[in-house]
Length: 443
Image (tube, rainbow, N blue to C red; front, side, top):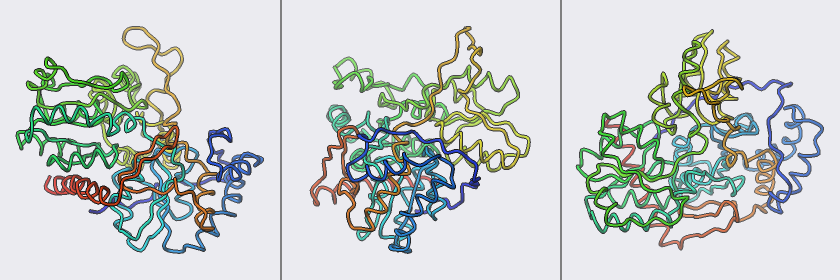
């Protein structure tokens, strides 16, 4: 396994204001409140001010841990954490590349991740035994993963397995817990990412098995369309937000006639995009690029679709004078716009339309929203706090991440597996990820 190695290319200007949500103090763990109070008392959010404050905590931690410390962040991070982590020698990438960082760097013993919990767990899943993985904020979750918890998926999977037995194969999107990835491994299935889902589904179809694709219905549908599958052979399961799912005999019969079963959840950030939005920008001379977690009509209309890595590199490699309208998480697009300015490339968010813009039916477009709110729960006070507390040997145990951990991002109630159960989970979940690597390499 190997992950892409490159810099985001972002430059930090002294006068660049930092867009950071101010959370109320009761959103912070007790151990982190002093850091939040100090941050909120700063006179401004300019890099010069924030860095001077962060340096007082981060620099001693870097000196203390030396080369054994690894800082990681995802592209979607808000609050300029992307730039902060990179400034302090950390690495910024998509969820697939993040998952490989610990395994690729065995000399790193303390891994601190600023992103969501499933990403930290994926790192822990592939980490060496002597590496510890920490998340800056355990409340940072992914709404898609939260709608595909094992207690939601397992009852449906059990029904499907009872009906179809060994003919059932699970494909688990990277945006799932280790518990779901382990189900994929146990059924002979594989993990997939937004960049390789078409290769993984193509591989699964050759096996002639019925596919359960968990959890993103849009990525599943877009992948089927990309492969030329009959979309009438897709069976969409009920929305998990509606309550516990039980498949009656009639639905089971419909599933029997299908080729791929789609779990009924999606990403709230990407569902706002539409084909009309895409065409609005195209009619004005913009190249449109979109993430495949978006609805099919938007992806079909766009000039290109791909992962965050694909979208970021499109901006990095765009010719001066290019105009790119990008459909993905808001913080990502804002950072991409800053990157574009460095090379005279104009970047806008696809849903950032004028107030008087209307769709093909004459209706105003949906509001865009700023980005992934749960991802943004990782902020400068959390980064300063976790590093300072780790240096002192006082980091809260709840911030440590093991493969198989199940955490309620609202209450922070955690369910941790016994060591023997964790070993079994790691065995199957790693197998599902290794199958993905084999498929991609073969493809």
